[in-house]
Image (cartoon, rainbow over all chains, first blue to last red; front, side, top):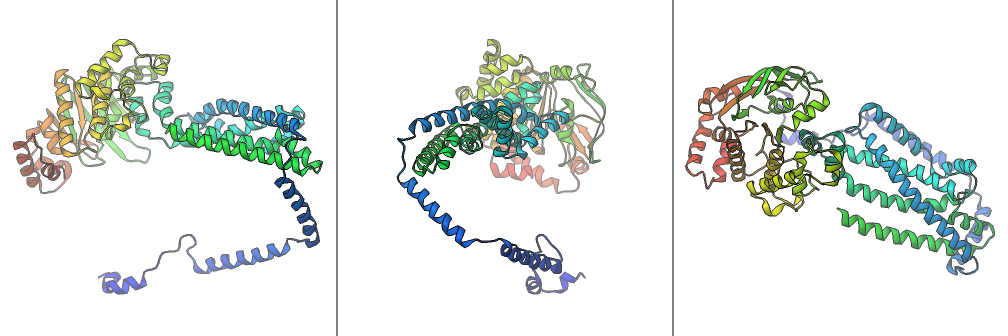
Amino acid sequence: MSAAATLSARERARAWRRPPVLIQSAAWRYTIYIGFLAYLVLASASVEVNIPRIMEGLDRGWRFIEGFLVPDFSSRWTDIRNGLIESLTMTVTSTVVGIIISVPIGIGAARNVAPPAIYLTCRAIIAVSRSFQEVIIAILFVAMFGFGPFAGFVTLSFATIGFLSKLLAEDIEDIDARQVEAVRATGAGWWQVINYAVQPQVMPRLIGLSLYRLDINFRESAVIGIVGAGGIGATLNTAIDRYEYDSAGAILIVIILIVMVSEYASSIIRKRVQ
Amino acid sequence: MLRTEKLTKTYRTGDKALAEVDLEVPAGQILGLIGPSGAGKSTLIRCINRLVEPTSGKIFLKDQEITGLSRSGLKRTRRRIGMIFQEYALVERLSVMENVLSGRLGYVPFWRSFTRKYPIEDIEKAFTLLDRVGLSDHATKRADALSGGQRQRVGIARALEQDPDLLLVDEPTASLDPKTSRRIMRLIAEICRERSLPAIINIHDVVLAQGFTDRIVGLNAGRVVFDGPPDALDTEALTTIYGEEDWAQMRRASDEDEDDDDQASPDIALVASR
């Protein structure tokens, strides 16, 4: 007779516990918990807090908010308009170019449709593109191509490739393999399999991701402008440097409005392509 | 028509799915392939059009050796082998018509399939086939708008659109209700007779297999353990294929089933399919 059978069901029910999820040994578990807690306390204590400086900053922040509450669209309107047009141009062109380059790389980076050599190459391209934040890439390209929107365009295209290719590749890897098998069984070639079995399955998501990236690229265009890549970010940077917080407030409001409009538009489009 | 010689498949995990299977299917014969799960039924039919690459052995279709074909030769041979799948394997987001026309992918160049500009005869054939399977009104619907039985009919039309010399059918009724199952099996059998098209039907339901096939082959652990007419499939044979079970009970149920075939009482068929 086994040990379990000699105990009643009630006894076994009392003895039952949820098994530990991650760390089996109780001693190790508590050592790690306490160690982490001690580190957290010491680490927070080591952060220096300069109270007088914060007070001064609060004052400056308040002026900023005041400027924001009474935005001044008129005195720097030409600069704002030019910056905005530059940013929008940068956003649209870099997104389109990014998508055009991302689709083949994304297909190549999907393990289930690409041969190993191409798979590794495309994954390497994605890894390089994703390992740097937009601002860092922008600093590099501004140094290479000089100040202005061209550096911004190259930066955003480059960043789009990493984002879109990776997510497209993952979506392709998740498709229903039976549909691919069925199309392959008809004698279809590789391009036909991509066109008939893969494309219909990933198209809605590709459209959704592209719209989402358009959104991100617009917001990023404002950020990279600060490091010299042109667009509305450059205008914003100038306004803040001149302590013209009312103009800066106006620029921020314009950015928020455009992001909201594109967010709303993309949600409608995404609903319709399902 | 179709002949395999010592067909063997060993998966990379070391599982021997097929062990020296010798099989010959004459023209016009409907062969039911039965056996327990994991017996190698699916592997066998996928080896025939090399969706699964055989480890050793030879396959001949009309004196052409499939096992030695190059990639382009394989494409040309695959288009002559129609395949019908468990759970239909239609491209869900394409229309019924595009799904049927995808049966021509092995015949048309990429630009034609990409622009959906198929030769007029192909489109005419597709409409004729949709009439034959009873889906004339559904040509423009998306495949995911159809019911299970309708989808499998599209699957049948797609396979026939290939003008096949052989049909490979993988569990055609596995996700259908008993009544629809019988109808689909009857449709497949009728079409095979009309065109004297040979078929290998891989099926779990022994009663359906007996009802609609000319010959039964029983597979167990990758070996042919039974080969004979449906009537010869007695208790002893079933025990060889599947192992010990109360087969008489299934037999009684199937006898009653024969009596009221048209109403195909669901609960009886359920007992039978156990």
